[in-house]
Amino acid sequence: MDQKKTEGKDIKVSLHSYLDKQRDEFRKEQRRSLAVFLLCIVIIVGGALVVVLYQHDTTVKLREEVLKIEQEADAERLAFIEMAFDIKDFLREKQYVTDVQAFESFVLTGTSTVLMLYERDKVEKDRRMSTAVLKQYLTLMYTGGNLIGMDPYLSLAIDYVESGFIPGAVSPVGARGISQMMPYTAKMVARSTTPYDLLQVSGYNPDSLFDPLYNKKLHLRFIKALLEEFGGRVEWALFAYNWGPDYVQRKWWNMGESVFHELPIEQREFANNVLAIYNKIKAGVD
Image (cartoon, rainbow, N blue to C red; front, side, top):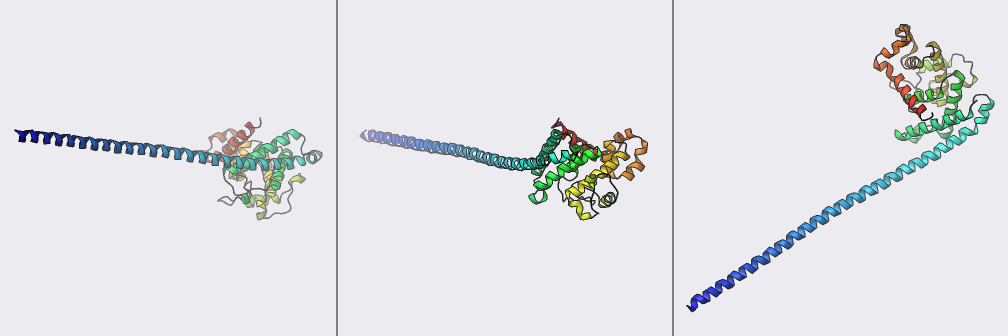
């Protein structure tokens, strides 16, 4: 009997020990699980914080870069404007500029258009026009346009599409310079006569086409001839400028002015692109 009681006590003790051990193991497991859970939370929160800080840092750096570009562009733009305005009285005396306010507006718009395109296309500094050259280029575009009866904003749009205002641009077919004049066309125009002293050039050299002022003088004279040949119709003059006046005259012009809108899209593309840019630029002015 006593033996059974002893055995019963031993079983109870063993059972309590076992249960206590199980409870300890369970608590340890709970603590381990909680520790793992808390570690995961820390990792997730820490990772999110790192991402947020990284994004914030990236955003700050991006803003700083944008601000730096804007400040540089503004300084450069103001320098161009200041120099261009320095010559407005001289131009007015020569009767090249009768509306100084319109001239100033064009210089502002032209400078902004050129600089923004340079920045958008990430054009290297050595491929851009210098401050002095850009001033002379915009002045020539405005005064020369007035002489031949051509809207200078249209001339600006042409160069926007043709070369992105890069003086050294060369097309796959060999067109050169800021207005993308073909050498044989430029040679023909350079050797022709013009009543405009401002648009005179001294001889012809194909390498001179990389000079924005030389190129622009020939370009204005060529566009003037095209406008006269095609009855002042800008879209037809642009079509002929891109495809060649002989081809346009022989193939399409005699079919009537309205046929322009029936031309294959690839033949209207250049004129349409130029006019779209022209309208966009003018919309910012008017």
